[in-house]
Figure 1 (cartoon, one colour):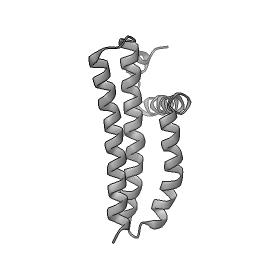
Figure 2 (figure 1 turned 90 degrees about the vertical axis):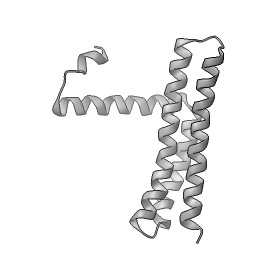
Figure 3 (figure 1 turned 120 degrees about the horizontal axis):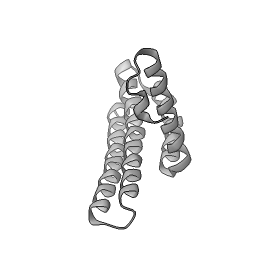
Figure 4 (figure 1 turned 30 degrees about the vertical axis):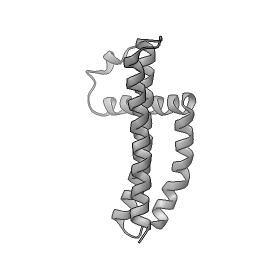
Length: 123
């Protein structure tokens, strides 16, 4: 069965399929991406810490959201790299540019999270 077979599904069946695809994506990232595993370790420490250190709902949301953003950007970067590698396994200037930009997006996510944590926790 292909992904196109599920496009017409609606309601709970569509939601169930989407959850399965998301689970598969998380599993693939965990299995194939060392950076994702490292960032998950960071999240395992930072998420409970953010709940504890945040004094208000807004502070907790900022601390937790900034860490989740890192994971989101890493997943998108990994997806981009997989597509580039599939489309053009040989070295190419445009492929390098796409991969470098994805890497830069992850770096900006990390810098952004550090800035949020500094602003919230540093009075």
